[in-house]
Length: 56
Image (cartoon, rainbow, N blue to C red; front, side):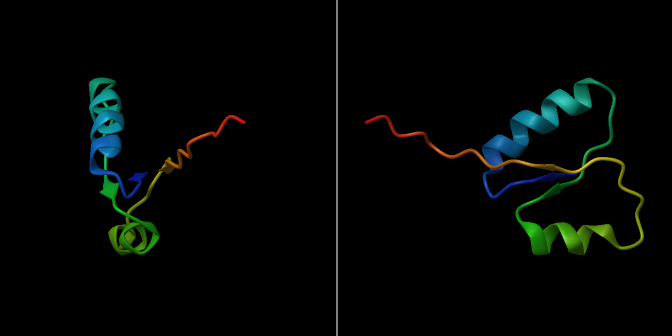
């Protein structure tokens, strides 16, 4: 499961994981992710969080 509010970031990760032969579930946030569980067995959750680094 890929969890991030950025659809484009989820798309990049999804393409890579599906290319490796994995089944992918996407969620736009924590609550959305919980809604996708519904008794499914999830083996890996990727929670993307990229923050810009400011230089002084």
